[in-house]
Image (cartoon, rainbow, N blue to C red; front, side):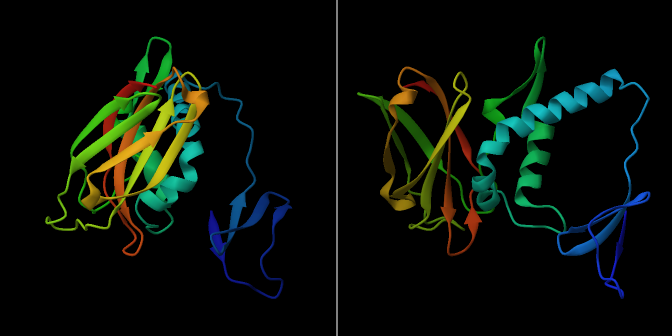
Length: 212
């Protein structure tokens, strides 16, 4: 891959002979046109492709959220790239039937803000969860007005929902009500704090699995 500055013809997009031109993150880029490989895919390559597919399918519905909660752009790496990299290394496991996510290691936020202290989740009838925590806003990089964020995932539905709540770190509690489509489903929960004014997020915590 090569980059080039605008010449008399400027940048171009598309294929010209054996070269493909495009604009990638504000840079004019030249690549060799891809060639179809006739070499069979190895077992290791197929495993890596399956692993990547598993993580990508899981995280894609959260892409907009992760763009705000998983760090900042570093060079050419976006927050979503960071999330993909983390989960490929730490939060996916291989089973007899293929790859699956390790929910206990999934993160929905990563950053320097102080995290959730002593969380407790209690089911509340009908179809709600009450989440409480300790106010640790006296610690470094923890602010009373940090906003509480919850992400839920129902594996059988392959569906996420997330709640950017009105609850703050200092309020020490939040009641989450679910849509009817989640009733009777087992859901996995993750929670974190965000601070929009400082563009900071805490590294999230896995809160467990609960039947709604």
